[in-house]
Image (tube, rainbow, N blue to C red; front, side, top):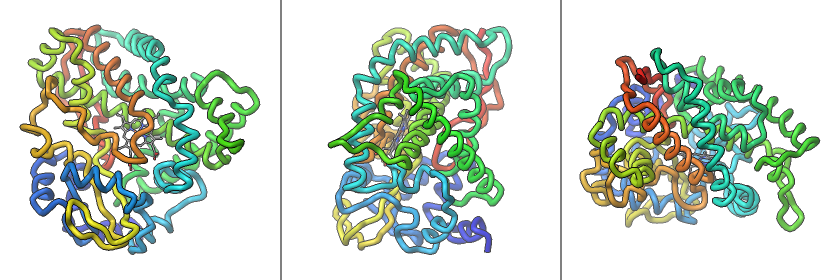
Length: 413
Ligand code: HEM
């Protein structure tokens, strides 16, 4: 049977399946998060285990009893199917992607990458991020209708990350379109045609990255990526495959997620003028507002881990080999941690306790950069266009794991 049909069969009627289906259809997930939470700190499903409890999610992501590499490592039919689909080229959830490797490889590898992506190095980019936001907004004709995803939310992060990785300006358009085509690679249950398009985009991306890395080797610049090419730990650098994978992951993660933070932020703040008014009154709250957007509408719906030994999650016994789906967006709505969790409130205390960047050793490498881009990006557009209003017809992305808007029509004046 085609992979897509098997995957559809495997997930029918299952909580995980309902979750990704509802996410793809743009339905409100609040009720389902509550239903999953009511089933226990970690609930058994036909498909594995699942949790929307904040403590359980953090526990699974931070525990040495769990490892990444959910797909393919559990020996299930689904896992074998995913392995079968593995191409030769890089893929965000297959080794040697940082996301898919475990200690001790992950420890050495991540140390080399974080040595370059330090909070200080990112902080030094603040001026450039602001300049890019101004530049991108300056290109928009304020008189006409505009799609904010295309003309701003996507362009800002891709321009920033391309600059960080030394990608020439002429290639940014290509990176953007390949990244968008490859974004569903994180999803389960793709239709056959999407699956084929994704694999084609990943293969093309892989070829382009190889050429870009060769170029940087011959002509190193001042960009963070040239520094990563040269980085050594005890004299040992990243392998060619690791470098390529990191470049691909950082590039894709650098804009495929942040575009959603900006889009959801604009949507939430235009829907809630009272909250925008609070920010105009108290601009020092912008960074908290970004945390609240991340909590309320996280760009990444879920992730998962496999138990390497029999263990417990929030007191519930879980066998070796259990695949646990950790629903980040559900943990962010846990009423035990967030009062009145469905309400968007830019003054919320503790908004930063969300798990939208994950937790533990795979905690998002780009969190500092994403926060900075979110704050500058949202503040700049609302300051520059105080009359910004969304028009009817906005559309959410159909991707299941990455969540946000695909189309946000607006008027600016
Ligand atoms: C990992 C979310 C922006 C690079 C992660 C994880 C999450 C996440 C949830 C952990 C996944 C897991 O544990 O399975 C986000 C969100 C972003 C964002 C919500 C924007 C709002 C960025 C940016 C970069 C980046 C801008 C690029 C610099 C990475 C990398 C990892 C990662 C390299 C893998 C780290 C590891 O496995 O050790 N991100 N991310 N992310 N993120 Fe981000």
